[in-house]
Length: 288
Length: 276
Image (cartoon, rainbow over the protein chains, first blue to last red):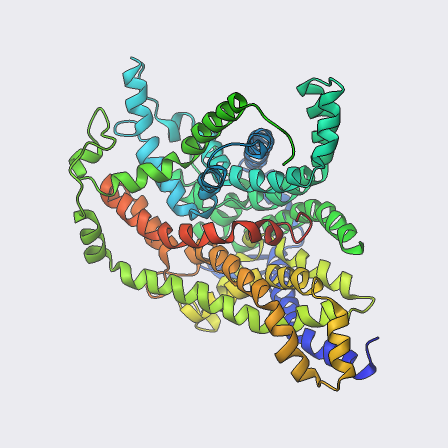
């Protein structure tokens, strides 16, 4: 058992990390809260005083708000559906015996290591460019007119880019979860004549449910914060302005810090709702 | 695996998996290939796959024109510095939580995780303002600090899950033999923990290298790492596919290679030990 001395030593060793993170969390949080209740325009007069909940009301009632909420939901849900569904299928496939499994795994995981600005620019120019992009060549080959992806189909294009980045993550985690499945159970089901679809729905899917939940929660937190992919491709135009991009524009582009901070508080609340569910699962895992 | 599978089925699996794997990898492959073409070949119609005159010209142009080395150096310093700094803070914390747990350890761990959930955009302006006040805007030191702080929860968590796998009995035996706390940490714990620390370093280096919110918003010229270097190619006059490809290849190559080594640890690190 730990002695009293080692307990206080332990507390001392924990202190720097706790203090740093506490400062990192509290200082900006309090500043954001403070700004959100003030009219604060750094380039047009600075801090113009207290306004109560004015910023909160204005942020929600601005014409850009609901479209931004909708865009955020479409992006997050679209990417989640694509990555989780394809991730499950890919994980099952990669779990099968085959030649060169290690290499295929590496190929599938690779996009996760590509920095967001690179993947956005590569997709934007080399694939989605309406004149010289690979898609344009492909469309012309089949006699169709090339599409201006990032202006005419901006949301699907961004969903495609972001899904490409996150599919490896979902696949990797689901594959790890599948590999912990007892293969005897599957074999027994197979011997009893359970068809592949039944084996999937009654054995594999229930076994994966926890991993799927974790993938959904972690991805949601990161997807709510998607930034570089929009910044580099459309700059928020053509209906791709998400909630976090709207806040970024309010704060840094139009320099309305009060309004942007109120938006920031909304974003923090939203992220926390998701986070609570994630923490519950992770917390349960700590107990055993 | 005990399942006996007909070689026909194995053949189908292999074909399907390779096809999908190559499809997913294709954008990266295409970028690497294009980086060796001339600009004219890069936009040739129909596209050239392997049948072009390979050239290294683009790499030379990119290095010369945009001072690639400085961006690379910034990326290395920021990712490396924040990882090392993070480890210095996190190792003692994770050690004490793993070996001298108290009633509140679980709460502290979860609270640390919760700071990771704070959306960056919500605190963008305060950080921006503090950086101006402290003279940290567009400085490498400032970014090292921010990167360290945003990744600290992951570092603590990963180390914690590794440390917890070290049997406590060994430590107790050492204590019985009269080892001091310092000796215990230095001669017993550290050697056993090195694999875990190494993979934690690797993952955090990768995460810091690819981070593209704070690096884009808090840098201009001096401290700009590769993420910003690439973003500067987003302007219309940067529409040179071969040069863009060369720049992209140089920005992702080091991490792609490191990433392949870290794929096993990735799952543990990114799910906070919830999936192993």
